[in-house]
Structure formats: structure tokens, C-alpha cells
Image 1 (cartoon, each protein chain N blue to C red):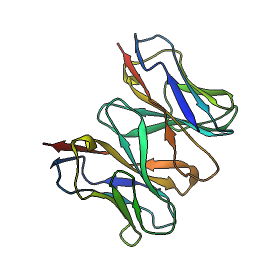
Image 2 (image 1 turned 135 degrees about the vertical axis):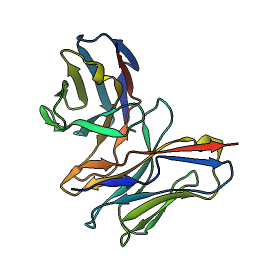
Image 3 (image 1 turned 60 degrees about the horizontal axis):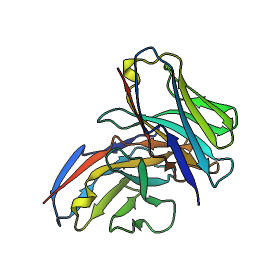
Image 4 (image 1 turned 90 degrees about the horizontal axis):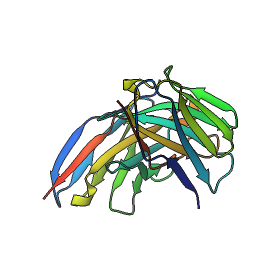
Length: 114
Length: 113
């Protein structure tokens, strides 16, 4: 069965520093990949997605993620973080056995400090 | 544009009481609908999903049930709440038979006392 591993449960970083949140998935079959962001006491918001085409995808607020098929990874990066990026980040992968479902990582808590 | 509503936003209920959480989607037809639970400090747990009216798939055997009486309405219920039912409940929707992105509601914070 498909699984998703977010390698870091917490990532503390200083403002304006670069950050990478790591995500690995278990299956090498065709997948769709997603990153979501959750601010405290709110629902999840789609940050970016990979469905096909270019392996590098970008969000409107400066995040990017690269699909690496050989390493089965979809790491999220930002070259310079802001205080407002403090949130929980979730990686998700389509379930190859049931295309209507997503398989979720446990989340990474990003804390941006001044 | 599509909008998803959940209510109530917060709820405090005693152990043994019933529960009803409602989710409605606007601006789309025949959506796939999902109920997730998020316990404190933990990830998302899929509870139920539905691909159409009256069609419910249960992911985890538990104290909860779900119903879909209308195309864009999804209800989560319990006859008797347990302490372990406390958490943040999220409704989500997607379209089509392929797991493109899901869109989430604002959530309901349930505390069982």
C-alpha cells in the first residue's frame, strides 16, 4: 500500500533563511503529489501540486517543490521564509488503488523565528 | 466559484451525547465528499468518503457514521460520544474519478467532556 513519510515533524528556522521540508512516498507507480498548508485552527489549503509535465512546480507565495521519480520524493523548498509562513505543512499522494483518495503524511510544523 | 461550509465552528459536548456535524458545498455538482479527523498534534485520518447520494465508504470502524442525503450535503453523526471523539473535524470535496486536489472546509473543533 502507498505510504507517505514526512521526515521532519518540526522544523525551526530563522526569518529570511531557506527551508526544505522533506516528503517521500513509497510507490513508484504514477502518482499525483500535493503539498497543503494549515494555519492554526483553520482548514487545509492547497499550496501546490504535481500532476504531470514539469517536475518543478511553484506556488504564488514563493514555495516550490520538485518531483523526483527515482528517489520517490517531493520536497518543498523556499529560499527565504517569513514569519507568516509559520504553519503545519502536509504532503499527500494519490492512492493508486483508489483514485478518489489521498494518502497523507503526518505533517511538518514549520516555526519561523525572528 | 466553489465554496464549502461547515458548522458549527466549535462544539463542546458531554460524553454519551449525540453529535451531528454538517458540511455543504456550493458551486459544483456531484462532488466526492470526505470527512477527516485531526487529533491534537497528529495527522489527518480519513473517516468516510462519498461518491454520490447515499453512497458512503467507511475507512475506520468507530463510534461515528456519515450520511449524504443530498448531492452537496454530508453529515457526520454519533449516537453516543466518547472522550476519544474529541478532535478537529474537516470536510473536503473533490471532483471526478481521479484524485486531483481536495478542497477543505474551515473545520469543527469538537471537545468531548
